[in-house]
Amino acid sequence: MKRLFLIFPLLAVLVIACRKPEPEIVKPLGATVPIEARAIVKVDLDAVLKMADCRSEGGRIELTPELSRLLRRWYGLPLLQACAAEGWRLDLKEAYWIDLGEGHQPVVTAMLKRQDLDQDEVLVDSLADGVAWLSDGRQAWLSLADGPELASTVDSILAKADSLNLLAAKGIDGEFFARPSTIKAVRRGENMANPIGDAFDAVYFGVDVRDRSISAQVRLASAGQWVDATSLMQPIDADAAFSDQPPGCVLVAAAGLTTNSVCRSLSAIPDLRFDRRFTLSIYARILAVNGTASLAMAPGGRAETIRNFDLRNWDVRFNLPIQGDPVKALDFADRYLPDYCYAEADSQYLYASTYEPGTYEPRSDFAPALAPGCLAVMVRIPYQSETMKALRLKSGYSIDFQADSALRLNVRLLGPAEYILPALITDL
Image (cartoon, rainbow, N blue to C red; front, side, top):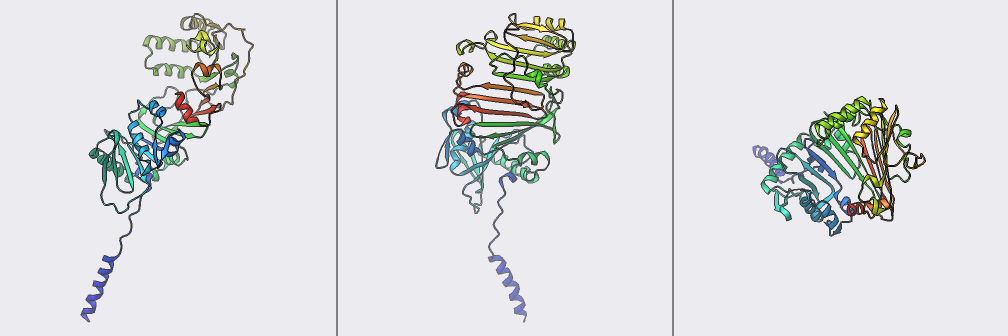
């Protein structure tokens, strides 16, 4: 009987010892990316490179010479080239750039296409151009650091991700990274002053790339909350922004100015001499600058004439809102505007132009839809236009930038080209 009592525990031990261990759960990639990083970029690298006309063979992607030339001064180019070349074993449809700061080199991470769940140790390898590779059989990390430094950085990344990662993020981080965009990025730092809006300590950037258009949005945050990028400005008056334009405009810009936003913007210009900054600030206060300022530009000749970008070769109209003495406004114009510019002033505006008033009939043939906002820049470079030729572009473009609490940019391709990224890369 005693032997029976001994047999049952032994059988239980044997069953437990022979049982196959449960497979380790593979964490989703976002769960290995810490929120506490100086910079994070999430990108569908496979789609972006292919939309940029990069050739793919067997999963290996080769950057075009034009793209390599465009990025030649970026220190991360070797890392991008290495990731593209390793596309045969990396799943580049979801990749992250992680910069912890604090002396760590940036790291790019992606899942392996063929995962080895039985790999017991971390493998370190060296790729071309000084790029180090580290893999645990499921996921890979690439960096310009050496092997030991990369291993230390990955340990820090995973330790921080165990505490708080993108997959478990709440608040604005969770909201932002949950959006379906081609590229999403956040850059954190010290609290920074914003001359036209609220101070911020983080910048969130999202980009959507389509065949013939690119749209981007930038939002600012402070202490984990969205802030207003243009809180010191006022809404644009569309009628004032699009009045008295010279015909054939290729650029129209408008801003809802206040004296405070002008003075703070002048203080933020790094290369502006103190005496000039001080004098311009005094003029802004004397003239009580407050309202919608606008700038309109039209080419004043053919491509060969306007290519040197001298204002004499462009028809330019600038309106500055004032609530001060028109004589002081004309004094400002005499002091700071070129001699060949014409200036007029009344109790509401200082009007300045490179052409004589009355040369053109007042018109507004360039008035795209203007969403309520405080800052707008609209550019139209029609295909085969003189402006396109003067800029030595191969394609035409439509560029709209508008700002309120957020900053929004839309770029559309004009002309017969089918895809915007190769066209932009070639023209840039």
